[in-house]
Length: 388
Image (tube, rainbow, N blue to C red; front, side, top):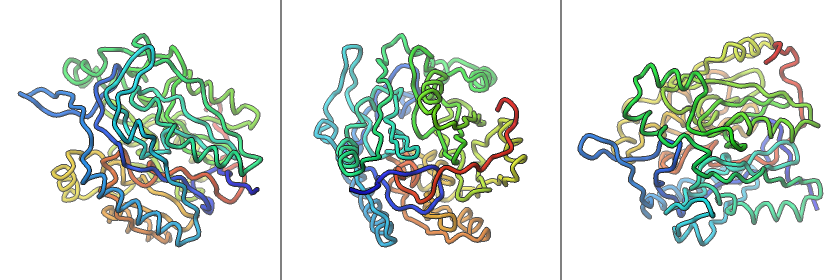
């Protein structure tokens, strides 16, 4: 038996990682409280739930298999998601409170699980279509539990996700009713379509930096979710810091906003920059540098929008990379300006063709979950800002 789970930050030498799979992924149906994938009909945007076609699944799989080969060639163990039959066959799913025609998919273990030290926590996610997504990773968790006597396997309280837990009219008001100023007031006031009735969080709303965890105030996480995790991890004496970003409607997952390729350096997405003053003060007090990422080329945005009907996915990818160690960073190959910037900073940058994967919910960071990195829990921010 050996130690299989140990991860405290985003950059220590990577030894083991979970990688998702695109099979069974769908553009999902409308749900209360959220904006969703849609099409335009007669000048109005209409939700259009549908499976993602097999040719796109095959294209994504080809790139993900190549990425797996790249990681394994560097001595990194890769565990792949195991798609359950209910998801693979695209069956409807339900609880006593609700039903949905499709599940979302299982390409993004970063969203569903949080690894802190020797513990992996199943997140209490706030979307009905993702309620049973954890099942794709259960065989992996079972394997870790049997082989690693120090592994702690935890599931946060499963939310009901009944209608009472959401602001039902939020998506339509955001899309068709509220003025731009009203929308900005909602976002700046942390007022999203998810209520605080029960704890929710997506694990991708967090970035780990040893003793400090940065947490996006997003549309998929609520105050009760943050409080549950703080209490659960209280014995570790970790510090939690809220980060807000300048997004017009629905800030979504911190790894689309920030990356931390090595200690002392944060890189932010210029399209959705962080705006929390205390966040910048904390970095300055501890001599951390924060710099903007390069921009996604207009040519590539147009190509993705034409081929995939999803320009925003390429905006995600600009910071959504994976560190192999503090000197080596994997990034989507089309982000040429960001590759140049990281190279000038002294990184070995590995361009990874991954543009066919982003349709399935994110790029290199989203589709992976690092579960073993060398190193322990260090304090990278010894100079704390009062109350933050």
